Image 1 (cartoon, helix red, strand yellow):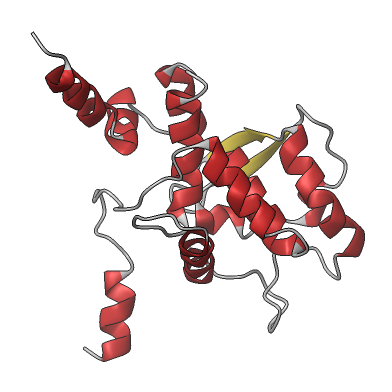
Image 2 (cartoon, rainbow, N blue to C red):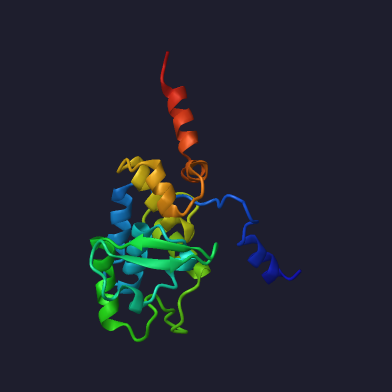
Length: 199
């Protein structure tokens, strides 16, 4: 096995393995990254849509202008999920659509998030490097990758907005709420809280 093959294999966890990545845990940190991306419309939109859509990185980078250009807040797009080949509806909010507006006005082709070199969609791996850099540049500590954006959506929905777990589970496309609990680390947090209550 070559070094490149080993690297590629390490970037693709076994089926059923839990992806080890951290979310951005609060709205202040999300806003700090947004502020740092002002003046970079593609990156700002990529981050903003990522934390507002709950899409996996591989599906996020494949979004097309033709899928979103006529949407209003509350409209949805239907995505065929690359990982499962299932259809998933994603509702687009005002924050995401506002971030996309400059891209829709200047897009040279149908891809919303093209590589500056190839003009094809950026890869999930490249998105992961970008997310890690954005987080590190803004003083965040943790394991960050493309999946961080999706986990941020779930984490903030549950811990900040108090969205019911059943709703989050459905939005993430999980078949079982137990998967969502493990995904968000909810059980671990609750156990920690129990230990912290003095008797």
